[in-house]
Length: 145
Image 1 (cartoon, rainbow, N blue to C red):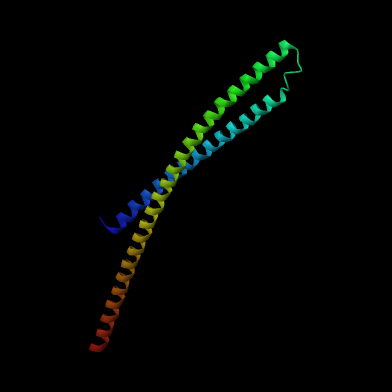
Image 2: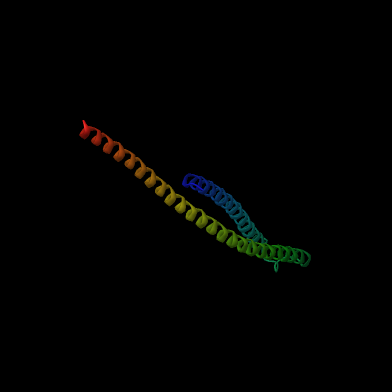
């Protein structure tokens, strides 16, 4: 495989890895938005629990109703907290996957850059050799005249 083919293949791999990183970044953004929704919902539920007031000053039937309401809202908030904790654990895994993908892309990018530098040096050497050969031939032609 020639150096040019190697460089082309590495370039394609770097582009594919970049697409993977972009996909994982988009996924992280979506997950962050979901986490924000969970947090906002929990804040609203806490507000609903607090704003429903004290139940002790109410007549018995209303106190029972208000107590049941608070209990249901608090139970739903607990379920939301559990879901949020699981979601944040998934986010941590996604963040590690994103970091690993970014590292792979960067490493391939470095290899690509090194190969491009090597090819450029080889091409420069080839051009200088041709120029030296032409200069030598011209000098030899000038000596023989």
